[in-house]
Structure formats: structure tokens, C-alpha cells
Image 1: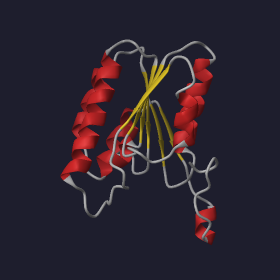
Image 2: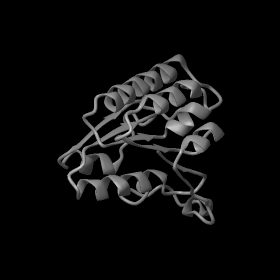
Image 3: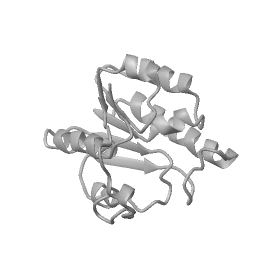
Length: 168
């Protein structure tokens, strides 16, 4: 199991890099996008055109407000976790990426114990990749590989908005 976390850019990009490499070896990939219901992500357009990649996205049309978690936010995250469980236990996929699951757990949209249970239930052949800031220490302990993306500098700090094709 791999965890990409930290306050720096590149967590999803790193996970998708692993997926791209795996596709070169004909492995099958399943990606669950937590909290990215209708957010326009360029990678999803490309992923939809690749063989051996399946993805689902969950979340509302608006960003989740960590200070005002709604019942609908939790319901979407629960659907995402259920989709992840189904994919992981299906034995149909070699790699399952749970994008932004660390944030969903940290913000209590889903129970961290449910995530741990899912990790413990996964078949050995399934490589599981968890992304998002705020990875729980329990997930870090369970992981084989942990990368903490540390922000040194970011265009946003200078007031530069997210750029289409670069940041999303």
C-alpha cells in the first residue's frame, strides 16, 4: 500500500504516474475520486480514453467546507468508500487509487476505522494507493511506501490562480 500526502502539490499526479506505468504492463486500474463530483479535472478526460482504466467520482458540485460538513457530503463519501470496497474485493483490478481519501477521513466524512478495515480486507495482489493531505498516522503505519509532498513554494502564494491543464 502507498500513501501520498502532505501540503505540497503532486499527490494525485504521483498516483496517476504509478497508474500510467502500470498500464504499460497491461495492469488494470480502478480510481475512486473522493470529493471531486463535478470539479473539472483534465486527467479524467484522458483517463476515460485509456484501456484498462475505470474511474468513478463522488462529491457535490461545490467544494467541501471543512467547517461545515453536510449530510450530503458524508453520503457522497460513503458511496465512494463503498465503490472502493467493491473494486478492491472484486479481484478485477491490480491497482486501486483512492484519491483524496485522506482528506475525507480527516474531515470525518468517513470513519478512519472503515478505511483501515478495507485495507486489511484487500487481497494481497491489489496495490492500494491513498492520496490527500492529512494522512492519519494509522494509515502511515500500515503503508509500505509513504511520500510526504512538502510545499516549498507555490504560485497560489503569489496570488496566481489554479491553471487549467497544469493544476487541474
